[in-house]
Length: 403
Ligand code: HSE
Image 1 (cartoon, rainbow, N blue to C red):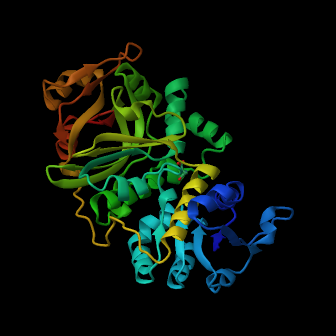
Image 2: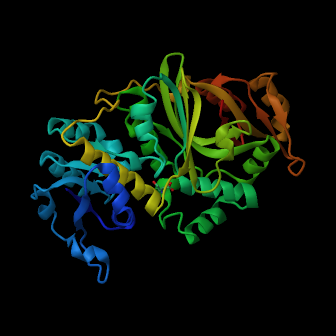
């Protein structure tokens, strides 16, 4: 029999317990042995909850118990999750987590400590909630050279953008609705400014490219500047504005960014609406593939943590393969990457804008807004675009176009 522990009985932690209690029989069958929760750590009490039988307020009960071989860290944040994770790994216990902040900041170090102690640090739930993308990238896509990963990795912002698109609401009202429905936090900064997606794409890029991509190096823009007018233009263009977290290779260089991007109606990510997440990958053998599902929420996220725990139980002291190495990836500044841009200018700047952005720029007008015009530029680097935009001056807005 394997004994496991859960650090944190919040949304995800109580979900992990529920997964093990609800699916006990089939999990035992699949694991090849009984798996039982011996401890759940939380500072709070939960009178009347089944967890009372295994609840502890003392981390040392878990770390000092040799019977516990696998631990779920579902506390979130850095403190005390980082310290607790290290202590568990050093005590020879595998740790499975949903904590993207900790994985993005300390993943390579924690994986090294795990290897040194013949255990595993697994983090399937850190990206895309219940979508099995980490294991797919570490195992199923191992024969491929991946040149692009583009994801809708944040459900809150995707809900807000979907609401703005479908109901014509502005950003503030859509955010309020997302908060009322419990999708957005009271302090929504990490989601709407792209920091959550930034950590997730750092993790996925590190696996795809086999070296560590630090989230601080990823160019990140949020969605708070997206306006209903931008959305109207997008509709006219048969595109949708999505917060894309992308990492891609262009002329041998690696780039990563998080930003609102216009997605064409022919792209698989176009139809990903509401709180759903999706990850699109391009491999040199596989071609295109997309992984779609619930990117957040108690049970989808818990399901991924529980699956990692089962894998860790089965692995025992075998260290599982991971593409992600500690060496730093050579990420290029976004300046030299190329794409088309959607740019809005006051109507009096129309002729000059066409001259500056090139005669091949396509023009888009909205009847309701005769005072402005918009252009889709030809393919140019970020740096070229910034130079041209500065030369023209007075730009009303710009959005990158997914290629
Ligand atoms: N705040 C995140 C989201 C939750 O909206 O997708 C999952 O990391």
